[in-house]
Amino acid sequence: MSEVVQRTQETAREIAEGLGLECFFPSDHELILDIDGPKSSINIKVLEVLTENGVVYWDNILQVKSKSGEGVHVYVCFAQNITPETRLLLQACLGSDPVREILSAVRLTTDGNDVDSITASFETKKATKDILVWRRKSERWLESASREHPKHYL
Image 1 (cartoon, helix red, strand yellow):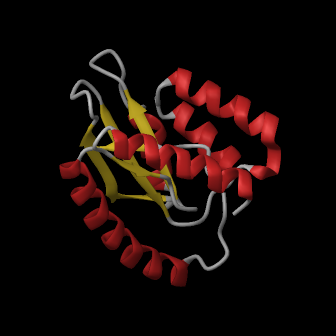
Image 2 (image 1 turned 90 degrees about the vertical axis):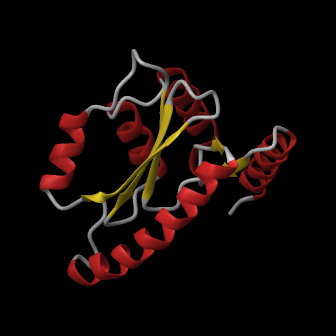
């Protein structure tokens, strides 16, 4: 991880801590969608295509309430690693907050390969517990998926 990314992630963690929240960054095989309020929704058709092709497994999708309580954060685990560019595009296609994704695109375009993780999510204590349990379950699923698709990348 580059020094710039490390400083950015440390700053995000400090902000979250100041708000009494936990900060999460996606792993190499995750998306974190930010679905704001009742007017936004997940593009289920895109998720269906991904699941039909064995790229995502329905049981490896977690939805938690956002800190405001009005929206949700959706964590999606893929069977293979995804690049920051692919993560950004999929998050946008799946209905994540467009302002967040545009700002991420600007950072990605500006910083290029220096960006390991351009997505962060601030979570409540309850959501943190659910996310940690989900991540352990996803790791077990990934072990079996990697045996089935050892070098499959998006």
